[in-house]
Amino acid sequence: MASNDTISDMLTRIRNANLAHHQTVDIPSTKMTRSIASVLKEEGFVGETEDSGEGISRKITITLKYKGKQRQPIIRNLTRVSKPGLRVYSNRKELPRVLGGIGIAIISTSSGVMTDRDARRQGIGGEVLCYIY
Image 1 (cartoon, rainbow, N blue to C red):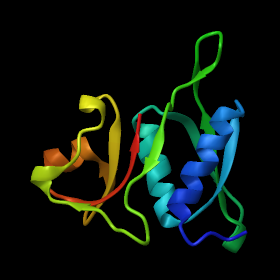
Image 2: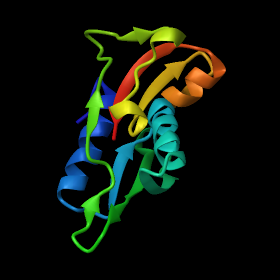
Image 3: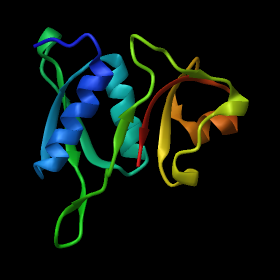
């Protein structure tokens, strides 16, 4: 099943795998999903990310992180902000803060996909893809 909104598809797969306490989750590989996966890894929300497959069957395998004996997921919430039907843009002065800086907003800028913190540091705005905390 091919999805038009690869970002929503990715977030839903991660959310579902987290709820089911899976160790890994496979996501179809696109330039955007690879960028988001690398931001999640840099910020410590997920473990390893690994590319596999060729051509149309390329996928990213993401290792999910849990904490404690009860294996609580590190990612408590993933929320899609900008959708294909309603794009949400933010200039550098109005970049959102998620939970007062505890969470991150992933922003697609002219300099690539980055967190709201990095975009603020570089003084650029862009499309607000999602919130994660």
